[in-house]
Figure: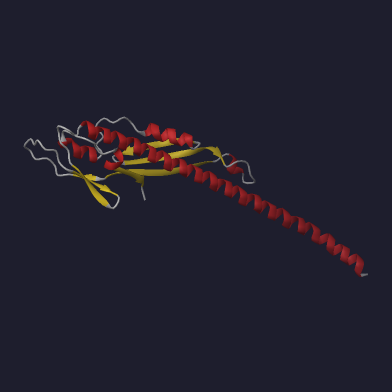
Length: 201
């Protein structure tokens, strides 16, 4: 009398076993999809960071170039260090270039003073998975890079002065002083001596 009952119990357990296995497989695929989405999101963030830094570095190089052009007119120095770009070309082309190198597209690039906000979209989705939205959704990410002036100087007085101000610039843990002879300028600071570029905290 017990043998038929055991077979009946086994028949009832098997469908439950199949449901448990199917559930575990679904969870495994879902976790995999979440992992794919996280990788895609990280890639978009990398692209956004690179794009923002590239735009800021392009602007920094332009500001440094302006400073070199106006090195003999120290009345213009402060405007340059304050980020008044005085007709600089739009640096966002570099953001587009770096985003493309990281398989993303720039949705928005907004330089405001010495801050560069960039939003990018990944070119690819996370791929097909058990979560349908991952096959159509592309990751977005934002980043902000800033240009930080590293140098200070004593503004020139109202009267014309033959000597140029001494430029004091932060150099790692110490300051470096640049003195200029109007008749022989010698080696001038490089863009990275004048400005630091980094991602905003």
